[in-house]
Amino acid sequence: MKVLLLYGGRSAEHDVSVISSRFVGNLLKKTGHDVFPVFIGKNGGWKVENRTAAIITEKYPWRIMLGTAEFTPDVVFPVLHGPYGEDGTIQGLCRTAGWPCAGSGVEASAVAMNKDLCKRVVAARGIPVLPWISVSGKRIPGKQEVHGKLGYPVFVKPARQGSSVGISRVTDYYELKPAIMAACEYDNLILIEKGIENPREIEVALVSDGGAIRSSMPGEVIPGKTWYDYEAKYDCPESVTVIPAGIPASLTAEARTMAEKVFSILSCAGFARCDFLLDSDGSLYFNELNTIPGFTSVSMFPKLWEAGGVPPEEILNGILTEALERYSREKSGTGKEPV
Ligand SMILES: Nc1ncnc2c1ncn2[C@@H]1O[C@H](COP(=O)(O)OP(=O)(O)O)[C@@H](O)[C@H]1O
Ligand SMILES: [Mg+2]
Image 1: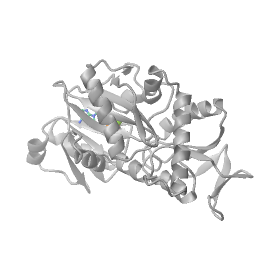
Image 2 (image 1 turned 30 degrees about the vertical axis):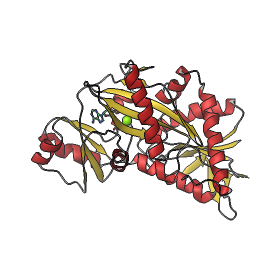
Image 3 (image 1 turned 45 degrees about the horizontal axis):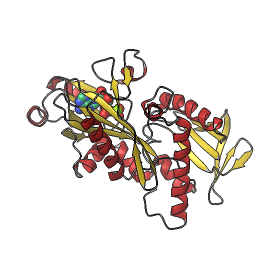
Image 4 (image 1 turned 60 degrees about the vertical axis):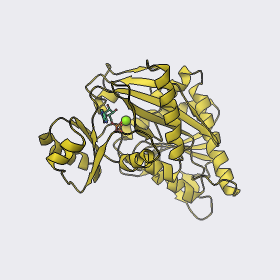
């Protein structure tokens, strides 16, 4: 298959995407696909090995020109994390262009990317989430509001980011304003969320092929710092991944069922990673769903499948096949699912 691999991107997670794309690109080549990597710069420009990449829109599906060669991709694989890639924007471009696109479509990507909207949607369907206050336009909620609804610590988060960028852990009211200002660097919609002290962080990988959703065994992340901030994620040898998570069978079943339910509620497609916070009293809370999870050799998503006996190339082929099948169902008018 001619796979257009989009990587880099405009978000604060640009560097993570570059690492993920190397792993994904090499595996796709190894399994016999023609991979056309297109680098998206932080400024939004598209490049191929320093030549210009252009989209030709005269005919549908649109074509791509790389240097002097022109082609229509069989499928697009956006290995992009965060805004302008994981949030429905690239998925919308593919839909407009007539290119099948790996992973969730416009709607699911946009809702999953927005922590405020996502929590509202899943909570309405009975999924447990931690209480939160959302604020926009740099509004600082009153002392009583935060104390009464949430207590401390709280986590202050930009609604549409990832990799812990712009997030602060706040332990008293006087730290709240600087934390909101820091989050506002990334978004104008901010969540102030009740914090759990020393939560266990449980993650479940998901794939789907049309009707069926499959979940992996849960894994656990143990951050090498107080919480899993950017440094703990990417530059901290003390952070470790434990597979399978050392939790009782009942919690394993609960996490997998809940992850599959969230995937279905959001109408996700292809693949995702669903993350939970586990409190010391055994309560499991949905934290977030990543529609394009990290995909490097050390990432939780491929490692969870591998631990279950499924090699990452098989997962990647499944993701591509699902994208093509969904596209042809839509084209033939038999598919009613959001793409
Ligand atoms: N409510 C919370 N209680 C305790 N820790 C939290 C809470 N929310 C987030 N964290 C910590 O912050 C990290 C990043 O938060 P998360 O919501 O997953 O954002 P991101 O999308 O950037 O990964 C989590 O992995 C966890 O370590
Ligand atoms: Mg997270």
